[in-house]
Amino acid sequence: MRPVFALVLFALPALAHRGAPERTLRLQIRGGAIEGLLSLRLPPGHAARRLLAVPPGLLPGDGGTLEERLGRRAAPDALRGLKAGMGEARPLRASEAKARRTPTGGIEAMLLVGVEGAPDGIFVLEAESGARVKAILAAPGHRLDLIEGLGRPGRSGLELRPRPGRRCRVRIGPPR
Image (cartoon, rainbow, N blue to C red; front, side, top):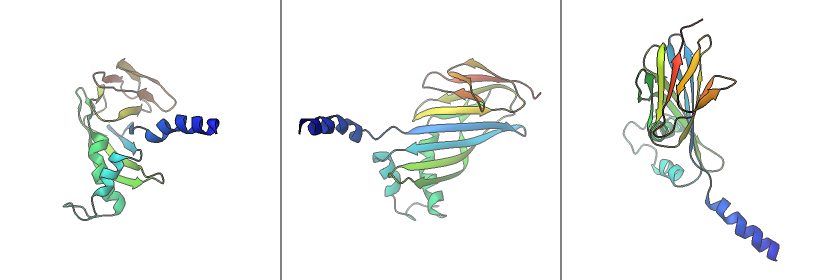
């Protein structure tokens, strides 16, 4: 009886905390532009229920498939506090967004984003608020040097970890 009670006692905190939201930004330099995908994973809980609570068709401009409607609702949460640009950081903008409900009751959203400016010089990435961000900047044929912030070279590019108050700055060299 005591082992079962102890197991339940230690399992309760794990059941109460279902995880934290996370964002992943994958950017690539291609054809003179920086573009990529931003993904947001919301665990089951209040934030996911809030996005699912609005009945379809209630909001103006809420047409399209269920994935597109949910993606438009999740986009502000995914983009919150994210800024990127050449020289100076500007808020990211999504050109397309889709989301789906996960089997566990959370939400997984994918957004197509682009960064203004030609990829030559200093690239700046900031995350002022919102869920933590894991970013990867891939630049086939370009040299990438981390000037400021948290990051390291990885298999598929330069891995960046911007935090509130700690932006990432990368020098992008000319094409080889």
